[in-house]
Image 1 (cartoon, rainbow over the protein chains, first blue to last red):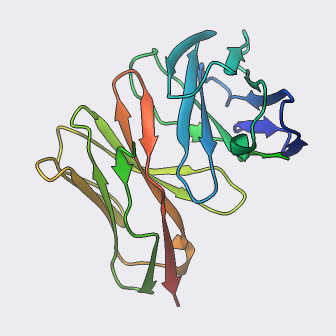
Image 2: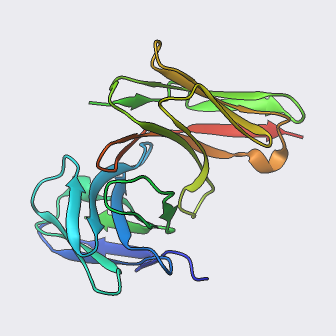
Image 3: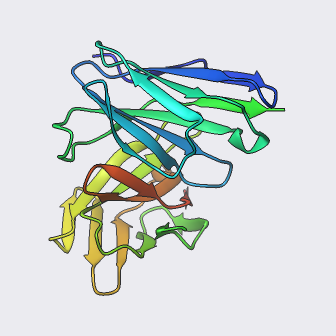
Length: 115
Length: 111
């Protein structure tokens, strides 16, 4: 059984650029959540996708957007990068009905540095 | 607005003794509480959870206690082992699957 994978592992961008991060969910999972973890902080919920639809969003501006594909993999897109976007971006997958709680499995994360 | 707080950034415990990690929250609408363990260069790994309608859940060496009146939960690890050394995150869930994490407590178990 393949776990949650994320790509790339590290990324360096400059202010104003756009970035796309990718996540492959664990086999059998239909729900993907994205988190931002700044240095010294806990993960902060960005949004969740359930069966290709956004199913909840945290306090992040619209320049953070996402997609979920029919195979339940997912992308996180960030436009107009700012220095404060530098963080570890974590993806977590789970199997759920969209409203019920099920255990999340996290990927190793993508470390984004914005210069 | 930090809805889940872990006020101890670090904790050191002797091997074999009890480790107690604490967490406070502000939102009474949270319906599930969870503890995650994180090693460097890995994503958080689920450890144990508790529903808001329970006050205790036990799984082997790990026990989580929930005090709803005090909006406080704690994770007890007995006995502590060197392999338990990691960062522990407390998390809380709202209906709709929004999760809120604390800032983490780094546990060091000294052999």
